[in-house]
Image (cartoon, one colour):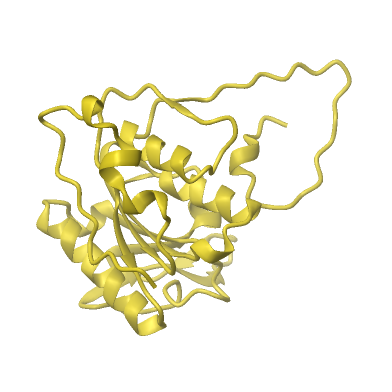
Length: 222
């Protein structure tokens, strides 16, 4: 009840309520318009979402990887790119599409020169989660749902395995940055739609003259 099916990350059985009224809304006020275009191009939700954010934004930079070492290098480079654009380390969140048991990022003490702030898997006597003391937040999409950050690095998604559950995780991840905020991807296989940002993601007539530049960081077919 009161849950968006596009953001349903756990496979719990639903239930019906007698005489309940269902209200559907595809309007998105948080995400920049270009992020919504990416979401629709990847068919992450149905029906497609409609952006009501006045900010156009830019297509997220994409870095692909084929090994854990390349994932770490790509994630570090994505963080460095955001820092070079003026974001503070405390403004950046790395959001993984995997849980702690399968992630190559969520249990790391550091990523490059940056110490991570991460859930340790332990709780104090009051039931509160214990966190490491770093500045670079690293979280799973399961724990980060409902939160946001000025800059988000979306990591550990495999486009070759984009089933319904993965689409919901990616939709949640891509909507974590808010208005006028930025995102970067680290994924195992690039989406075909994202490889043509000018012709498919944003028609030329809709691009404002003051739009931020588009970065497809280290894009390559794998």
